[in-house]
Image (tube, rainbow, N blue to C red):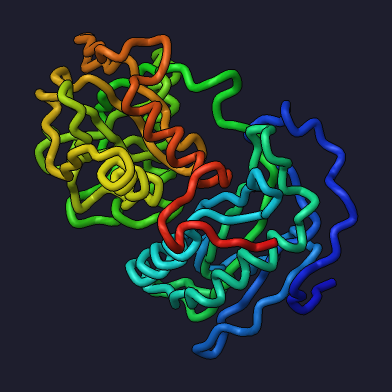
Length: 352
């Protein structure tokens, strides 16, 4: 049964979860948002209690993988507000992703309406402040129209569901060990710069292979020359030089991470650090003092060691804790998200 969007849904009390001990996994919440594209236009979105997706066997998503998605979080701040972090950028990135796969962009204003509606309707599932947990939001759209010849579908569906998740790292973020991958994550002039499911499918074999060999993640190199650092399967790199300069790899085939963009802004404007976006050669990685992987789930995952086909590159920050600059960046960003620090104008969207 579907219902029209309602502003200010009535809260009946927090869900019965051990908030401080939940893990990072899917838990179904009562309401999600659904909108359909047909006859050249997006229909009115609705909330629904039905988590089931029904598709024709010849739907475009099943035949030719037309699908894009986003990931963001809602938080309870120190003063009790429920907020989302920079959802406008997720909306804009999803528009870019859809255009690249010849899908009808879901309007930014409707995207933000969906975020507000789903968070408000599931307010009892937003973890309390201080638990380290948050409400993860997954907007996605896919081809529902029937296609058998290779071409874009004519019908699509946008959905947004939520799930409460614990901190990505229980007990604090310990530095991880990654390996230089033998595989390419994206093709030159391909789709590496958009957030599409097909890109993540491409990285799964490399991810499983890395784990089988005792590594936490992969370092993918540029697909053209395999000499420059790109990203992992699901996160951007951020490096810190020995004189505290923040360096991020520049490439047309990596995803423009919202977390990374936020961190480099904070590094320059809040911490007073020099920030450079440039090509980063694999050969210079050993010269950096700190390294991290940044993304929505963990904010920053510190990297302690990089293994290049048996050659170990050990970061001076070590394997025990985040490096000092990485820690400052992490603390600043999470402080803004949780309302203990004032953020730049427009970064926090108050929902409830």
